[in-house]
Image (cartoon, rainbow, N blue to C red; front, side, top):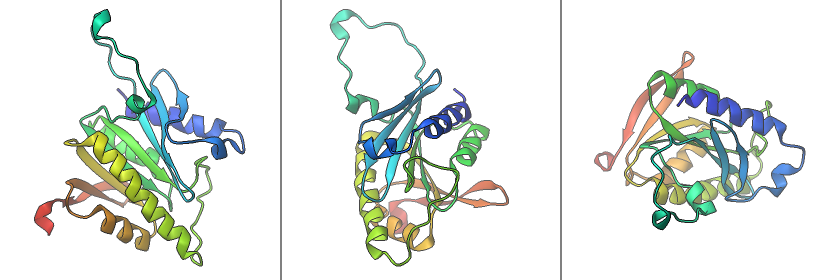
Length: 203
């Protein structure tokens, strides 16, 4: 599956959102479904929103009638790939670059994008430096969202791409801790570089 095609479909879906639609989105909402995959809202808080961008799974042999089960919204919010990329997209539009990097490295990943702009517009929405509550709110919402992702992505390879102000990144790292393994990437010279492996060994 070409993750770049799925991300391009997601971007078209964000563009197509009518003004005010983002206010109606809630956790578990399906934002878009296309030939390449789907986009869901993982969590919507007062300060940020997180989306799960999933490619369509390859078709397998049909199950017997006895083995069929009814799908729920929670099933759709499950991480299905062996890799999950978490993209914190606040100070720079990074989603397309991340998808390009994953394709180039042949990493087939579900993508969780965290942003403070529900409609993911072309213009970056900067955080208010005078509003400590806004910054703290994002950190707390990030912690809640990561706990949801951890339940779904236990044992999977986690890749973290950060485009956010440094104080926010530091605070997010503090709530993430070194309990969970993850690879962290740095953007330089129009390319991502894997620079840190988070693990208990760093404690």
